[in-house]
Image 1 (tube, protein in one colour):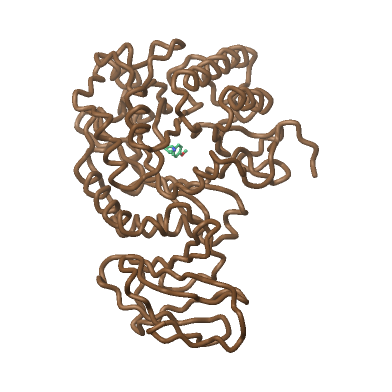
Image 2: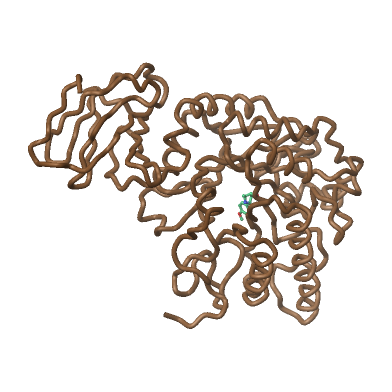
Length: 449
Ligand SMILES: COc1ccc([C@@H]2N[C@@H](C)[C@@H](O)[C@H]2O)cc1
C-alpha cells in the first residue's frame, strides 16, 4: 500500500442510517436547469450539435452573448411544487439539482459573485423553493455543484505561471465560500454531487480539496459526497493510488450502466442518465433516440440489481416549465413503480446468477427475491438458481399476490417458476420468498400449497 495523506479516508460502504437511506432510494431525478435552457441548444437559428448545457463552448455563440443571458432569466412558469410532484409521481426518492453548472450562473443568491439569480429579472432565490418543495414531497435533495466555473476570472484549466497560481488561489477561496454558503443556506440537503473536476488545475489541489471535504463533513455530519470531488496527491480520481474509492459512492456511471457486479467493486454507486442520447440541459430539438419508459424501467431495475441507484435527468425549459415528453415518461415510469416499487426500494444485489428473463433484486435483510422480468420465455418457465441450502417457500406475482405460482426444482437448487403475466407488453415482477432448505427430499411443489 502506498502511503497517502490525501487518499480515501474510508474503506468499504458507509453503514450509517443516512447512507443506508440513500442506498435504498433506487430511483432518483436529476434536474439540469440554468441559463443554457434559454437558447435550448440553438443560437441565431443554428442548432448546436453538442449537449445544450455546453452551448457556451460553441464558437458560433459569442461568450458575451451567452453571459448576458442572465438578463433574460425570468422563468414565469417556474413552479417548484410541480417539479416535485412530477418526481413524486415517478416514484423518485431523491433529486439532484444543479445549483451552478460549468457556466457559473448560480441558482441561489450567492454573496460571492454577482452572476446569480439575484441579478436577473427573476431576482428571487430558485434553490430555496426547490429544496422546500422536494422536502415537503418527502424527496431527499442532493446539490449538484460544478467546480469548473467559466464565469469566474480566477478559473484556470491548468496552473502554469505564478499569475495562474495567484488567480487560482482566489478561485479556491471562492469555491470554498460558495460550498459553505450552500450547506449553510440549505441545511436540508443530504449531499453534494460534484462535476467539472477533471482539469489539471483542480487535480493538483489534493490537500486543499481534502481539507475542504473534511470541513464540509464537519459542518454537515452525514453529508454524502461522491468519488468525483477530489483527486489524491498523485492525481488519482474516483479511486486513490491504493485503488480505494474516494468519497461515499462511485460517480463513474454517467449515461452508462455497469454490466456485472464485478464492475462496481463492492461500492455504492449511482448512474445518471439522459432521456435523449446526450442532452442534460433543455434542448428544443430532441434528436436521436429518446428512451421509452420501458427502457428506463429496465435501466432502473438493472441498476438496483447491481447495488446502485438510477437517476433520470429532466431539463426544464427557460420559462421554468417541464416539456410534455418528460412529464409523460415520468407518469409512465410512475405507473409501473406504483405497482412494483417493492422490487426497487431498499433492494440490492441478490447474488443470483443472471438469467435471460431479466434482473433479480433482493430486499435488504429480508428473505425476498424479486425477479424483474423484461424477456418473457416462450416456455413460460422462469429459471432461477438459488444458493445451496436455500429453498423457495412461496412464489407469486407482485402485481397479484393471490396468484401463487407453480415451482419445480429441475436440478439441485435450480428451479423453474411458471408464470403467465397479465400483460405481455409491460415488465412484471415474480416474488420468491425463500427459506432454509430443511432436507434434501423437499423438491417438488404443487400449486395447492
Ligand atoms: C467532458 O465531457 C463532459 C460530459 C458531461 C459533462 C457534464 N456532466 C453531466 C452530469 C452534465 O452536467 C454534463 O454537462 C461534463 C463533461
